[in-house]
Image (cartoon, rainbow, N blue to C red; front, side, top):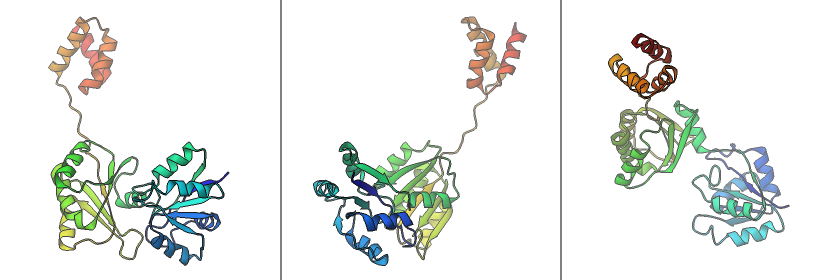
Length: 274
């Protein structure tokens, strides 16, 4: 059965490719590349002579028939300019249709600017939300950021260097002076992780205008301290529940999640009242 391979490629340093990825690129019958000129540099570096065809944002639907025709007689590898295909790059439609046609899809692990920036940012990595490319217009960006302002997981997004200063200003207005990391030129000679508050990072890049590809890593919403009821408020709520027919045990259990009091303390108050 022919296989469609999803093959990550280096995000900068050409050494950041797996041995398995190189083997697959040598063995497939065709490589579908987002930019054949960029991919050809990688292939020439490793002396790989597999035929190339373009598959990018503007021809991705028109090229489906040709790629599936190639899959009838051999395997095909899908690559993007850098990183993992399908992550803010063409690939989803091809993978979806291949699955629907019963073609084997094999996704290789490999380079990704998202996880590289996240792990190096120093911000929490136990949960994160990938936002893709941020809206370009300030008003749309502000509204978008407000919509995720209460998200407690770390936020990760792509941004262009010419938009970075304006974007940082909108982040400060919409989300406050959070901790942030701007990861720039990952794996390349001038790689930079600029970490600090939005104010700190904004000052740095205002003085030193950024260049190259950028990943933004933004701290999630801070944990807010739970509101703890005062004793009078708790006694009133407890009396209302008991009057409504709740047992003392169930009332104490329910109010513990609302009041900030421990269940046993609420139970003790109820016993005193009785």
